[in-house]
Amino acid sequence: MSRLTEIDEHAPDVADTLAQIKQASGSRQLPNVHKALAHSPPLLKAWQPFFNVVRRDFQLSGRHRELVILRVAALNGSGYSFSAHIDIALREGVTQEQIDILGQGLVPPGLDDGERAIVAYTDAITRSVSVTDGEFAAVRTHLGERATVELTGLVAAYNMQTRFVLALGVETDAKPD
Image (cartoon, rainbow, N blue to C red; front, side, top):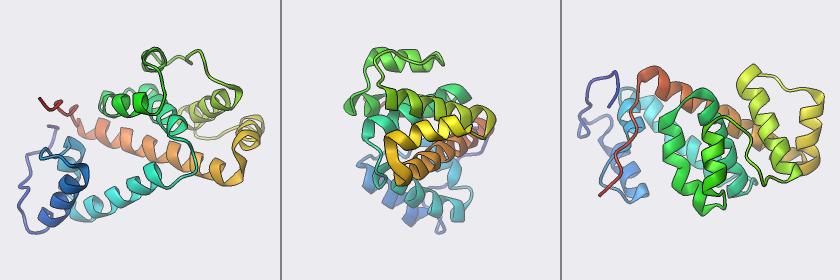
């Protein structure tokens, strides 16, 4: 699973939260990231609601969201995060060719001007933390202020998530049979 020891999914301080996560995902298998998070009950309880907001409540389209998540995962070398989002990205309209190219750390073909601005903005935040006035203006022109703030939050959240799984050695989840 990771560099950490296995957790007891029935321990009183995490059992309810883990059960809610399983129920919400419709899976009997607990994702490895949640097994790692369960070592800190407060972090486990805060993580899922935060990422639910990031993934579900922002104005960004699902396609834009998944381009960003895959881009951050690829740039940070997080196979866990990248593989977890391939099927979601396909459902949101990212092509397999684009996914493959993103996985190589390259900018895929077929992106419109707004998507290229989003990828450049994601690259800047992930690689150097800050963005230039030009990168900011390009994204703001295409998205507006609220979605630009939400894009920034999405990039920051997945930089946190990828660094978390990489530092703890969280292994890619097995695909259900």
